[in-house]
Image (cartoon, rainbow, N blue to C red; front, side, top):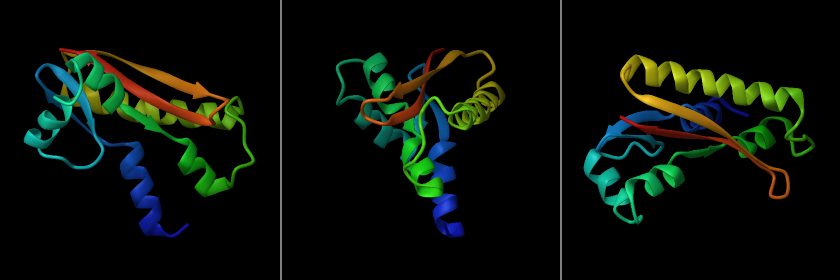
Amino acid sequence: MDIYRLAYWLEDLVPEIVELDGYLLVNRFGQSAAELNARTRSYKSMPEAQSWMNIVLLDGFICEVVGSEWQSDDPSAVRLLSIFERAWSHQVRALYPAVSFRIERLVDDESGDLGLRLLSKT
């Protein structure tokens, strides 16, 4: 993996987290507030928008780095989830100290998905 691809992946996995209408949103694509607002309106509600927009999957990154021969219950995969959870938590606490939030682990062995979802309401 070259440094460009590493930067791409890390930027995707530790994205900017912004507040919009009292909700924290993962801004993975560097969108403006107006673009994020328009995107959230494509969902039925802000909680639904947050639920879908705040999913970040790690499985593609893992496959790129180590290949496809890994399992979601591997201690190292679980460790990666913990590392990114801490990075997200530190960012949220630093930028939005009054916000109540949680980070859910998403593990779907059938599809191979492994990731995180940020949920909050200010």
